[in-house]
Image (cartoon, rainbow, N blue to C red; front, side):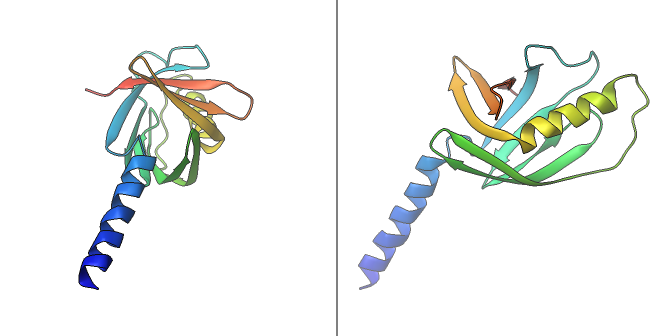
Amino acid sequence: MTISLCLCLLSACVFINQNDTLDGTAWLLTLIDNIPPLSGTRLTVEFSSQLVDGSSGCNSYGGSYDIKGEKIFINQIAMTEMACLDPGVMEQEQTFIKYLQDAQNFALSEGYLLIFRSDGKALTFVPQD
């Protein structure tokens, strides 16, 4: 009986890890719909144990995520509330967060992570140093 329980628990852990190809990865944004981020800003995303967090260029954010095949859902995003005065930074941040909130699909291709929203537009990331 104990062996059966241990095998069930081990198989459940393997199942979770196999489904989440992003778990334990960290990424740096290179493009928002083929447009590079503003100079001097650093937008990031990190995935760990169904939690997502990072920098949106001005503020820090965090939330949860779920992956089902190539589908990705990013939920319950909360952010710090600092105001950045550099031109365009707050607008870029709002756009970035909206893309994450509307995430529908993702792809890992040739070292890039692409997160697509419902209209097919994408955020493009490279691995974070």
